[in-house]
Amino acid sequence: MTDVLKINVMRLILAVAFLWGWEYAATAYKLSFYISRPSEIYARLLLWVGDGTLAKHLFVTIYVAISGFVLGSIAGLLVGLVLGRAKTLARVLDPFLMAFYSMPKVALAPVFVLWFGVDTSMKVIFVATVVFFLVFINTYSGVRNVSREQLTILRLMGASELNLLTKIVFPSALVWVFAGLRLSVPYSLIGTILGEMTATNKGLGYLLANTAGTFDTAGTFTTLFVIILLSMTFNGVVRVLEHVLMPWRIEHDAEEATI
Amino acid sequence: MVAGGGGLIRFEGINKTFNSGGRSLEAVGEINLTVQEGEVITLVGPSGCGKSTLLNMAAGLMKPTAGVVCYRGNPVTGLNRHVGYMTQSDHLLPWRSIAKNIAVPLEIKGLSRVKTSARVAELIDLVGLTGFESAFPTQVSGGMRKRAALARLLASDPETLLMDEPFAALDAQLRIAMQTELLRVREKFGKTILFVTHDPDEAISIADRCVIFSGRPGRIVRVLDTGLPRRRDLAKLRFEPEFLTLARGLWEQLTPDMHAEACS
Ligand SMILES: Nc1ncnc2c1ncn2[C@@H]1O[C@H](COP(=O)(O)OP(=O)(O)OP(=O)(O)O)[C@@H](O)[C@H]1O
Ligand SMILES: [Mg+2]
Image (cartoon, rainbow over all chains, first blue to last red; front, top):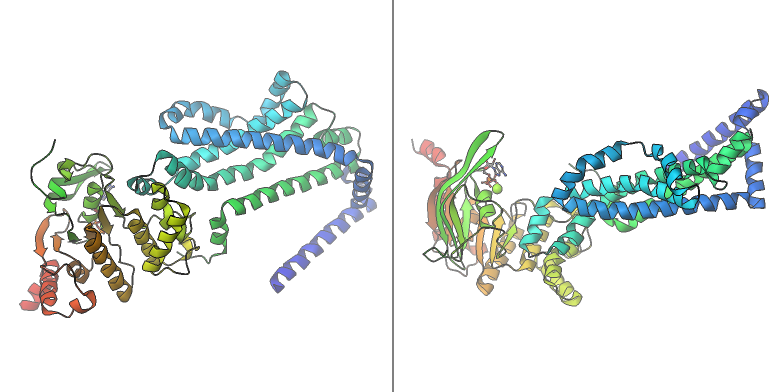
């Protein structure tokens, strides 16, 4: 308990020292054009919260990121499960999937603008595509890594294919699925913000590009700060979901290490 | 194709040779053995002599290189669903609590929730896991995992039980309790049991017949008929002269070199 307190006090000191150093450097060396100042950022945050600017852009970004994330994860999960069980099909598709997987998805952004225009659906599809591959690859590996012994023992007990799927394949792939989901959180935000920077007039990505374009450094840093908060919130939600769906994993963490 | 002869499980001229990494290794061979229905057969022999391999073939997980395993007169080709298999490692599902692991075969059979939980409670009590129902397999001891696997096997209620060193991780009292339970189940439901063990006393005390193997490549060197009654008190048995004679015979069979030295 005292350990936790000590760590937290040290964190607080570090944060305060960092903010003070930042403020001091910006004022003393007249750097606020490049790095803004914590006090300015704070003031801007209050202003944007007050006049509704923040809510307007934030909700657009949240909407796109979450829709893309959910669509991409569901599709990735389903295709991963199916291909994980259908060995021949998986072998046929393997090189194509790998080729597509290894392409930097960011490069797709202009193509998506071409196909879907600049409205919200383009960004949702873009994010969904990025998330799809991460979740798909992880689910697929999870399904392929299911213990054959466990499957055999249940088969001897007379298990049907559906029994195997619900009692073994899905729960054992879940660990992998969550690895994919956790990876997908920052990517869904990257996708959304990138989409908003290239083509739109709303969302945090637009706000970022717009403030930077008009040399409004405080605005840019404020937007960055909000993006960090958003990303941390998404991560937190995924972690809570993980603990709820995989209780045996937390218990595992709480155990003492044994060999 | 129905081969002649009786018996529930027949190993006919079985040989199993593994080919791995360009090397071929004969695990076990020249096996002819007929297991009668309702019989308890123990398998003993040096590590690596192919005992688990024989169980795998009886369960239909592996094909013999030569020979045929018959179950009720029919050659075993695919998985043999008449048997339940308690493997050498427990293979419990880590994402299910102990109670939920034991419930798996009942769920597969489509038992109602109420009946399932009643049966699971019975089995938990039987194997002495009361208080650990909601623990996950990683949180209990090796012996407790073995007992959970045993309870799961009993829940699946197969006609024939294949058991690979099921009680190796248990203390002496618990082991006798589990052995007694196993014989009771056999007595009551007429189960057939193939039981691998490294404990010579266990190999005698629970067996109708004890099959002794040589080192790799595994061969049957002797089949010991214990002649012990079906109903026996395992706690007392170990002090009775007939048991001591049998146990001595088995020890001598398993460790001939030591005895040769002792005699010279
Ligand atoms: N799947 C496999 N592939 C290759 N070799 C195998 C395989 N399974 C078993 N073997 C080999 O066959 C031999 C017999 O193995 P098996 O597991 O049947 O022995 P065992 O009598 O059960 O030994 P133990 O008492 O140590 O459990 C061993 O030498 C082992 O290396
Ligand atoms: Mg073995």
